[in-house]
Length: 550
Image 1 (cartoon, rainbow, N blue to C red):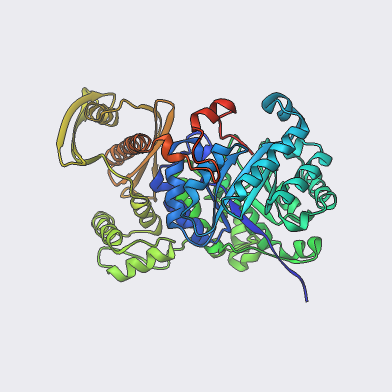
Image 2 (spheres, rainbow, N blue to C red):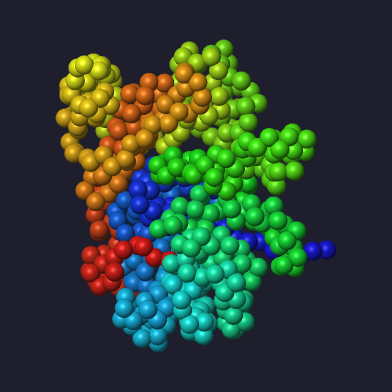
C-alpha cells in the first residue's frame, strides 16, 4: 500500500498577490475572495500585512471574523509593533497564524538590515518567541533564502523552531533559483536542520525567470510540506507560483510524483472550484488572464487545428491531458432565456461557482430577466458576467440613475449624467468630450468629490454576436493608489460609465476606511508592557516600510 503525503496549500493572493501593480482590492472584494478560497479548500489564507495600512488591517480583521475553515495568517516583519498589529487583526480568527519574516541573504543583511548574521538570528528568535505569546501557530520566513548561505539557513531555522516556529518558509524572493538547485537546497535544509521534523517546511517561489511553479514542484519532490502560491499567479513583478498549475500538476501527473516522491501526493483543494476562483480574482483585481495561460486561460482547452479537433472528437485524451470539467470550466448544458424560471437560474449559478444570499440572487435574477429580454439566448458567460457585477457589494457613494448622450461625426459629443448619492441626493451635470464615453466621464468628474486620473480603459465583448454584452474595465489613480472598476451592459457607453463609477466608489470607500481606522486601532497591547505601546509610525521609521517582501 502506497504512502499518502498531504501537501498544504498556502494562498497569498490577498497579500503578495495584491502587491502586483494595479491589483489592489478593497475590503469587500478581499472578503469575497477569501470566501472563494475557503470553498476552494486551501489550507491557509494569508489575508494581508496588518501594519501596512488601516485598510489592510480592517480587511484581515473582517476575514478573521467571518471566514471559517482555513488558517488565517497576517504577515509581520521581525518587529514587535508588526506582530502586535497582526494579532490585533487576527484575534477573531478560528485558526490564527502570525507570519514573521526577516532577510537572511548576505546582500540583504549587509545593505538593508545592516545587521550581522548572529544579530539576525537573535532578532528572529526573539520575535518568534514574542509572537508565540499570542498564538501557537507561528510561521517564520527567511527572506531571500535562495541567495542565502545554506549553512546559515540551517542554523537560523534550527533556532526559530526551537523558539516555537511551527512552520519555516524558504522563499525564492527574487525568482533567482533554478529548479535543480532549489530542490537541492530543500534537501540540504532537511538534512542539516536537526529539529526540522518539528515544523512544516514551506516554500514561496517568485516567477522572475519563469520557474516559480517548477521550483515549487522541485521543492515538493525534495520534501517540502507546504507551497505558497496565488490564484492566476499574480504578485510582485512577474508574479508568484500559480496555485492552479501546482495543484493540477500534482493531480495530472500523479504517476510521476508517486515515482519521484515514493508517495501519493494529496492536497485539499477542490479542483472543480479553480475556474470560478480564477475568474473572481481576475474580476476584482482587473488583471486579465492571458489567453494562453496554463489551466485557466481562454485557450487552455481550445483546439483550432483540424488534426487536433479530429483527435479530440475521436478520443479527448489524444490532445487533452485533463478535462475542462476537472477545473470547473462551465459548459452550456442548460440554455436559459426569458422563460426560464428562478430555480433553473439558481442551479446554474451554483454550477458556475456562485453561492449568493437570497436577496442578491433575487436582484441578479431580475437583471437576468432584463438581459433575456434583449438577447435570445443567455449563455454561461453572460450569467457569469452578471454575477461578477454583483460580487462583491462595495459601499456605493454614487449610483447611476440615468444618462443622455448627444454625439455624431459633425458635432461635439455631449453627455448628461445623473447620479444618486448614498443619502439620496440627485446630482446631474453636463459635459462635452472626445466621444460619448469621454464626455460621460467628464460629467461624472464634475459631480464626485475626487479628481481621479484615468490610467487604463478597455472594452471587450462577453460573448459573440451583435447583441452581446460589453464588459468595460477601467483603472484610475487617486494620489498614489490605483483602483479598478468594472461594468457590464449591452450598451457599451453604459458599461463604461458603470465601470468608471465602480472605480470611483472603490476610491471613496478606501478613503472612508483610512479615515475611520487610526493607527491606535492597529496597535495591540503587548502581553507584558501595556503601559508603553509603540506606535506603528515609530516602527515604520525604524525599518523599511514596504511590504514588498518574500
